[in-house]
Image (cartoon, rainbow over all chains, first blue to last red):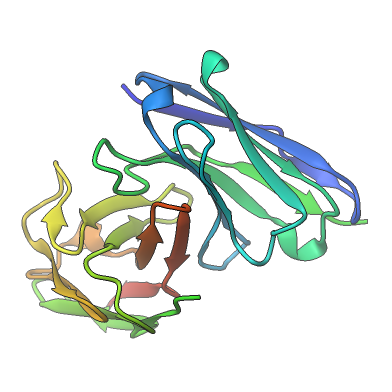
Amino acid sequence: EVQLVESGGGLVQPGRSLRLSCAASGFTFDDYAMHWVRQAPGKGLEWVSGISWNSGSIGYADSVKGRFTISRDNAKNSLYLQMNSLRAEDTALYYCAKDDSSGQPFQHWGQGTLVTVSS
Amino acid sequence: DIQMTQSPSSLSASVGDRVTITCRASQGIRNDLGWYQQKPGKAPKRLIYAASSLQSGVPSRFSGSGSGTEFTLTISSLQPEDFATYYCLQHNSYPPRGTFGQGTKVEIK
């Protein structure tokens, strides 16, 4: 069974940094592209960043480009999101999500980790 | 950047109704579109991929159609468990990129 478990969320002050992790199990992690998707309280879904299986192709939403860095460690079956210069508008539930074997996105999702940016 | 316009933003319907939700892309996206259902407090669930392929395990009352710039999610006979928010997603693989529609909340009439 595919499992994606996010961690690392919490309360952080504006301008500070936070690193999210997503632990994957139940599938061959290095076969799949992975993504981060967020949802601000009461709002819709927003794609944040994605990374190919070998880290050779990476993309970011304009809203986080230059502040967030996605990475993965295939040996540890883990996905990461380094978030710097955090803003109040980054407050959201952050999900990691996995593509399927055909490259179609977001077949599986974690349950999310909450990031709150506030002074 | 590609923009996705989803409509309506909300709708009220009764059990047994046929429901249609539309997403329009600002430029042609072939069939690089999926549909997702989200219930309160839960992670989204994929219903449709590649515009019209039904995700395994999803009831056949859900269907997707379209190509290019206009796409539709249809629920042929709304069931009580279908009351939720639905999102379309446009995606690219290289580099990875995605754009969600604004969402459609389906409520009980």
